[in-house]
Amino acid sequence: MRNNLILATLLAASPFAASAADMSYTYVEAGWTQVQINDDFLDDPKGDGGYLRGSFAIAPQVHVFAGYSTVSKSYSLGTARMKVELAQPEIGIGYHMELSDRVDFTADIALLRLNDEVTISGLPGSNGRYKDHTSAGRATLGVRGKPSARTEAWLKGGVIDGSDIDTSFVGNLGGQVMFAQQWGLVGEIQFFEDGTQYMVGVRASF
Image 1 (spheres, one colour):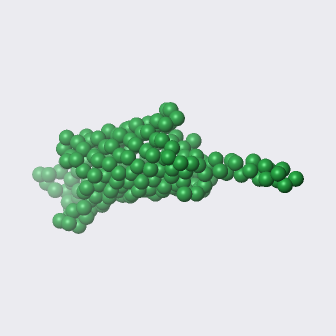
Image 2 (cartoon, rainbow, N blue to C red; image 1 turned 30 degrees about the horizontal axis):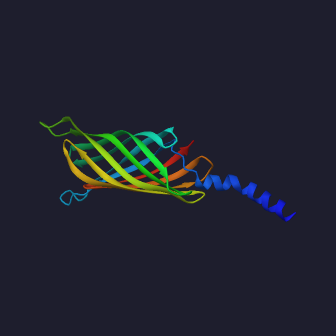
């Protein structure tokens, strides 16, 4: 009888244990984002907006991902108006390897494009829309793990480099709290040389 009770308990707990160790690399996510630029002269300007990103596992240890984020900030002085917009699309591929039942090693590379646009109105001689862009590559290494059945955390660090960008460090710290079987609330902070990006969103994992 005692052995039967132990077996029944293990069978009942096995789905919960499996979910605690499982981390999906197929998901879609959307939410709010803010970018703050380190600039003492401009008093650390920041812009708010939204983001959308997703990941799809194409092999047991390989996934592809893509994302798009956009933020904006408006300024006014008398009748003059200026709106600054920054958009960043990206696409990449990632690899993960199990280090333990709850922790994965991760590595990824991505191509990204930084699009900035300035719209000026109410200022004779300068009214108009001005656009610029630059392309860059990013590579990071890190870890992703599940502290508990309903929580997840990740930490990554690497470099970003481009034709108009000097090679610099980029870091990423994030986490997720599951509030349903497939749904979670995600928070993330990305550090780069000239600023910080904050993200809060909802993720659906498959």
